[in-house]
Structures are given as C-alpha cells and as structure tokens.
Image 1: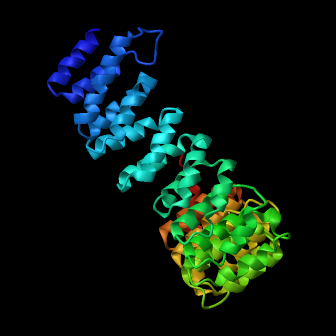
Image 2: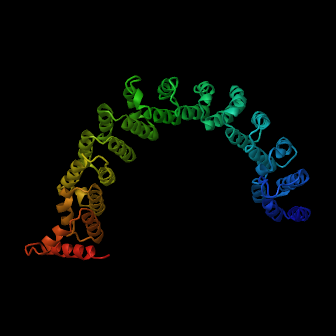
Image 3: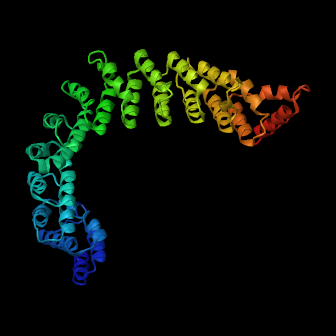
Length: 427
C-alpha cells in the first residue's frame, strides 16, 4: 500500500510525527473499507512499535491509539516491551497502558506481575489503573497481592476502581490494615455497596485514628438513612460533630442532614449555636440543616440568623431562597422580611440587602413585594437593581404604577419607583 510505503520512508528518516500520520490513515479495524493483508498488518505493527521505542512522549501518546486497532496481534510484542527491563521506562509505561485496552487473560497476568515485581512507582501505578479496566477478570489476580505489604496499596486501589460486588470479600479483609491508605481506600470503595456486612464496619471506622478514614466512614453511613434505627446511626455519628478535625465535623453534619430526623437536626442546631463553632463549620452546619427542609429547621435557621455575623447570615439567606418545598416558601420569605425589618446591624449591609432581594425573587412570594419596594429607595445602585430584578419575578408592575401616582410618596422612593418602571420598559 502506498501509505505503508510512505510510513516506511518516514521511519527510516526518524520522522515519527509523519509516521504517526501515515498509520492513522490505514484502514485498521475496518475490514469493509480496505482490509490489510497479514503482511501489511505485521508491517504496520512493527512501524508502530518503532514509534513506541524511539518517539517522544507526544509521539508515543499518538501512536498508542493505533495499537488497539491492530487487534490481538499486538499483544505479544507489547508484553515483551513491558517486561523488558533494559527498555526505556517511558516506553514500558506506554506498553502497559496500551495493554489495558485488550480483553485478554494473558494481559491480566502480566500486569499483575508488574505490580508484584516492579520497583518503579509510575510503572506499578500504571499497571494498577490498567488492571481496573478488566473488571471482574482482574479480581482473582489482584486478591493474592493484598497479602503482601509491598503490593497491598496498589492492589486495593485497583480493586476499588472495579466497583463490582466480587471485590467486597477481599476489601473486607483489609479494612483494619495498619496502612492508612489501604484502610481509607477500602472504606471508600465498600461504602458504595449495599451489603449487610459493610455498615457495622463503617460504624467501627468512625473511631479510626485517621481523620481521613473517619470522614470516609461517616460519609458512607450518611447514605444509609434506611439503617438509622437498626444501627442507631444518630448516636454513632453525633460524637463526630465535635471531632478535632474540621472536615470530619462537616462530613458528620452532612450525614445527619441526610438522616433528616428531628433528633438529627436538633443535634446540628446544638453545635451551630455554640459560640465555639468556627465560621467554616457554621456554614457547613447551616447547609446541612437547610437540606432537611422542615418547619423546625427553618425555625433553627431563623434563630441563628438573629445573631449571625455577615458570612453565616448570607449563607442562611441563600439557602432559604433556594428552598424547594412550596409549603415552606411563605415561611422562608417571612423570616427574611422580619430580618430585613429588624434592627440587626447585619441587615443594613449592602451585600445582605442584595442577597435578600435575590432570595425573595427566587422564592416568588408576593409577601416580599413591600420589602422590595422599600429597597428602591436605597442609595446604592446595586441594591436597587437587585430589587428591580426581584420585583419583575413577582410581577409587581401594577403595584409600582399605582405607587407612581401617589403624591405622598417620599422623594427617594418616588424616584426609585420611576427608575424601576423605566427599567421595566427596557426590552
């Protein structure tokens, strides 16, 4: 074929980029177009291997796309390159990565052998990732590697990526491993399965010495609200609200929010109202409470809003504005109206006024119309614009027209109403 001839010339010249272009033009894997003879296929394979052997990273990356199209004839030479300890490490890395695209038992065996014998971290990491592509076929080869400390981390990482129930037994065997990475990876993977053996292990992991493991365990339990009574999840998770690690506290708050019980929200509120709770955790707890969307959680948020500083106040206003429950939206709007009309110094801040207008617009409750009209008299342009945008969502044009003809209106408000009506007419 002419393309193969051009490719051969490019190979003699060491022009790997041109060689790649030629190989990409071959009708590989598409017999209906123009099938290659066995001789042509062997020639194409050898040319592709020459790029893998001598090209730079980008050229190797490009030619890697050719090998799967060549079919299983490419497996043997790629395995040979992978296992050649005299070959350049990057070329071996690419050979292993390409082999991960072939569904063949011999490939699984050779990649497992790399995990077992190689001392190069990049090569073993590549093998672990490639093995995950084989799914359940790789489990049998990976499981024995869990017994050896030098290969356990990579083996458990590979198993965790397979995401099949057949990985549960080997992963259960390493949840108490001395290595934090092994425990963490096993817990994270097991949390994605609904299996009766797993939740008790997650409860036990809540007391792990590693904060990362505790966080992963509580995150997993937060997804099992169906077991909250059976396993008394509330009392298992609640101590982690006071964990010395802030990320664990936040994860515990999210987990209790997902449980959604009155007892869970009461526990969240108890921590939220404590003066000792740092600002980032206040935000996390506010979000967890808002997740539940009950009348009780709205009352909790209203109480917190009454004494909040700016950042948590803005968060509460935001979550109230994003409520989904139609029955709770009027209450949320009223909470914000009461806050707006209060003497709380935070309510006077520009950012807070803007957030209030945005929240009222999102809630779509007409009760907020008067408060928004009041904002039209604000001297700050951004507040007025937010109020106008919200009033448009509430279809308040008739109300504004009525106010425009009221001669008793304060000058600042009259001017604001006029501006709003003018904005309304802009297409």
